[in-house]
Length: 91
Image 1 (cartoon, rainbow, N blue to C red):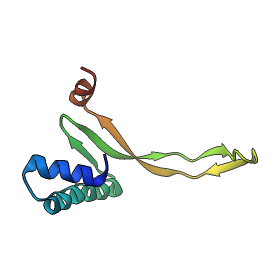
Image 2 (image 1 turned 90 degrees about the vertical axis):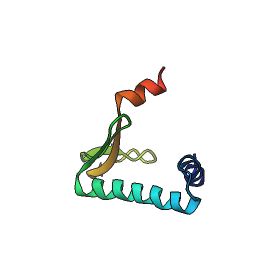
Image 3 (image 1 turned 120 degrees about the horizontal axis):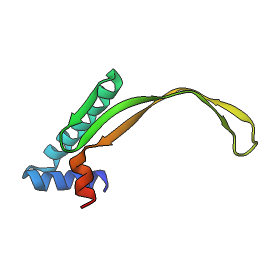
């Protein structure tokens, strides 16, 4: 689903204009980004939890040369689905 498709679906389901739906969807993703940056997690009961996690530094290999390289520590966004979402996906 593309951004425009998502905004169109939200607008239709909520009975609002596409521009209003785009503002709300943008605000939602902005809030998720801000929470992740500050180390907070966002919990939506029945859907799941969004949380930034730290992937530790590690050694890797350059596939072209086979040389060992250092991969630095990074933060990644993690989503853990709620039991209700898992049940909806696997009836």
